[in-house]
Amino acid sequence: AQKITQTQPGMFVQEKEAVTLDCTYDTSDPSYGLFWYKQPSSGEMIFLIYQGSYDQQNATEGRYSLNFQKARKSANLVISASQLGDSAMYFCAMREGRGGKLIFGQGTELSVKP
Amino acid sequence: NAGVTQTPKFRILKIGQSMTLQCAQDMNHNYMYWYRQDPGMGLKLIYYSVGAGITDKGEVPNGYNVSRSTTEDFPLRLELAAPSQTSVYFCASSYPSGGAFFGQGTRLTVV
Image (cartoon, rainbow over all chains, first blue to last red; front, top):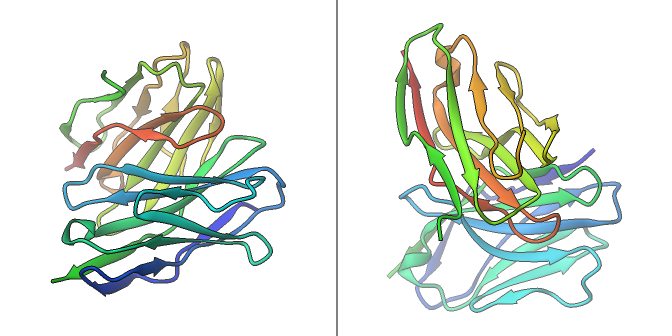
């Protein structure tokens, strides 16, 4: 069954340091997509980064990179050079290639300290 | 450049009332989704659609109904509102690959 798990309810990081947010998934579909979203305190959902299951290289978008380890079924988000504005909830999500259902993990609350 | 538009932004319902949350997208996306987010929690999928005329249940469909008669619109119907349906509702849309884009959400309170 399709499943996505974030085991870190909260994380702290010092400003300008890098931080890794964990995400593991489970699916029997060989074709799937993995996503990360940011939800600031204002409540909107902001799409950050996407990784396809057949992509050979890890996805990167500016300061965001996705550490995709297919054999371990993990898709961790790495934020480099953290900024105060990175303080938010972060959600990992997965969509299977067949069916189209997009489900989310429980989220990780990131706090960036000055 | 509207993207995904949800109406209304806020609503208070009395127990037993019904309402429809509207969602429209102008990006010609095939896929559309409805989620609810309870305070301090993640997003739970209510219903989704992979194209006009096709809908399917998500993780928490009970108490809700949807229809998808056009590519652009995906309304969510609440019948016989209950306090447990107090939540923030998000609509989203996407292509079959790539990220989903979200509306601003509807904050619903059932009293």
